[in-house]
Image 1 (tube, rainbow, N blue to C red):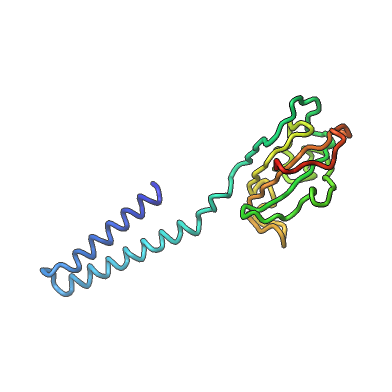
Image 2 (cartoon, rainbow, N blue to C red; image 1 turned 90 degrees about the vertical axis):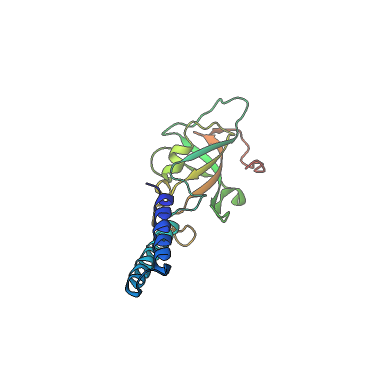
Length: 185
């Protein structure tokens, strides 16, 4: 049963009771009872609508990891696997576009061991199989990011995170160019 069906049924009940309450043939007591029932139905309708809006997540939020390949090199000689030491440039944003961190601006990519929990789960999974020089956009749900607690003050609880990433090196082997053109990100 969808919320639209429930709201439709509640609306129908409200209208039915309002029509009955305004029927001139009804006694005053019946009118009052019908009006009272109509008001209860209307209150229920308002509560259902409010609950729907409160429980609905923003359209830009995701529930599962989304990986978008933005650029893939012509040849993929070096690929990232679990346990590899990787060097990654990134720009982290909230769904409203607010940038909360960026290695591009610092000119210093992050280095870590992939798949070992040194970074958020969305990164550990979203960077697997990536080629050196490849650029990916990761949309990471809160459960694979910082969860309901967030990372105050820059990342609110329950936030979907968007990362523009570029794999610079794997186990010390890379393109040799850590200064990157991030216009494709």
